[in-house]
Image (cartoon, rainbow over all chains, first blue to last red; front, side, top):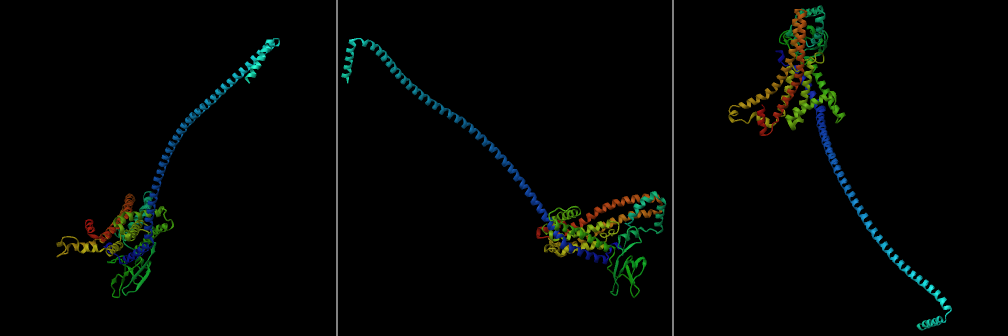
Length: 165
Length: 360
């Protein structure tokens, strides 16, 4: 029955050793370890949370970027469309302006041509009348040179002119 | 005897290749009239000196501290009283009720047992286990001081894993908010028991002492839990003990329930004490018996010894593996039950009192 009778010496030393061990560990070991464990667990939790947040931020940013891109493409299309429209409009306008201008020029040309034609007609008539007069003069000169009646007629004409004045 | 496991390895080689020498060795054991009971108990119990491995001759001499009947203290090395020698009137009793312990004779000629506070094999093993425990735990603390949020590696990581396992798995989940108050005690208990258990499994010098299989050691541990439970117990706990919430007839004329409850206060630590003691002592005893078999069969010649050796070694290897597991489980169970008893004594409010009953 030796096994079941506690030895007083061993009880004493066990108590002493255990109390010393407990005091040392309770003062320098456990509080520090447990606090650090908790702190580290919290730190890791925070890190994970932060990472998740960052990821969601990133996802959002990507979605936003995509939306922006789509928007930009749309705007680009619109702008291109507008530009095309504007182009046709401008061309149309230019064409109209050009035709107006051309008409103006044509009209002016027609007017000047008319004028020129009238002028030339006038001049032509003048020249024709001069030619006729010259011809008539030449013919008259010949007949007048040797005829008394003609002198008389000239006199008569002169008289008429004189009378007119 | 546990040192002889090492002998067995040598035996295994010799039994088959050198029949002669094996016969000689078993012969010498026979001559010494091998007494298994004595050998087993010698190794289960305490000693005044510590045998070095592979030899019965070389021992570490340890201080013997005794107080005689006149009240004088005597301190001397244990080799002074080896082999039946007498020193300053003290000797190791070879028979009688104090067999194996230091005895002396008083002036009337009666044999008596002096107050014996010797640093025995078990005490030295205790101190070694405590130092190892200090080193283990403080190395983790030092790691945290040096490298704040870095995860520990290797040994420190393993210890930290154990701490985390006990702290979050047992202490925090049972005690809740009160965990930090009791965690230092419970964690110290766990690591100290675990190290004592494991050191007991190592056959040679720094280990090999049957510490947690010694009732004095488990008694002190259980006593500490008893003190913590009852000193830190709440009012509600004491009310539940002496005036529990049961029908009047169970507590008024005859205090049946209070008696049971008070009895329970003492049976709880007693169960702790016996459980750890019996488990560890049993494991040691089985291995010692298995090894003893080899020497018991020593008389039957080389072939039988060889066969028995192989079987014994295989079985004791298996038992050692189980004991390694048991070492951990018993440390865990002791811590878990201590936590549970503390949490029961921390009962607050009426509702928790009922939960306490269910748990019991």
